[in-house]
Amino acid sequence: MDVDTDLMFECLIYLNAFYFPVFGICETIMTAAKYNSIVDTPDIVQDAAVAFTKLSAELIKMVIYKRFKNVRRKITTAIVVFFTFVTFAALIYQLFLQKPIMSEGAHSGQPRTLTKHAN
Image 1: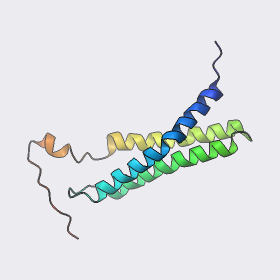
Image 2 (image 1 turned 180 degrees about the horizontal axis):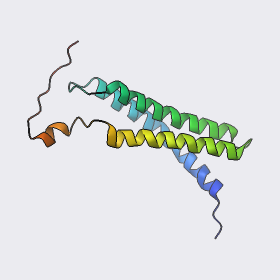
Image 3 (image 1 turned 30 degrees about the vertical axis):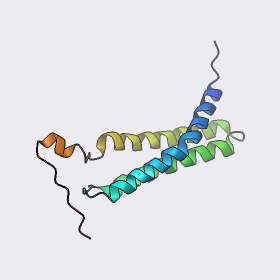
Image 4 (image 1 turned 90 degrees about the vertical axis):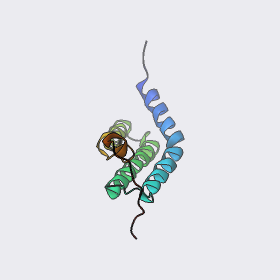
């Protein structure tokens, strides 16, 4: 059985392009909600920068692949894979390194108090 890797890669990029609008809108809304939350979110600027970097890398990846796939396929694929590593690093940050706000009160055994930001 011969596997067509180019076709598989093309399908993954197509799926990425199909779901990107939902992903982009949800990521933006979640970042805005964390920024406007009554619970103080530590490192919100860093979290927003990581989310923006992930969205930008995904968008650049799709545009580069669609624009240059027929001109220089190997170089284009290498660049797209590099941007996939950027996205993966941002995802690792969001899953494991970002400070979890909602679970802090639950694990400490103390009740959480909600305070409004001082403007």
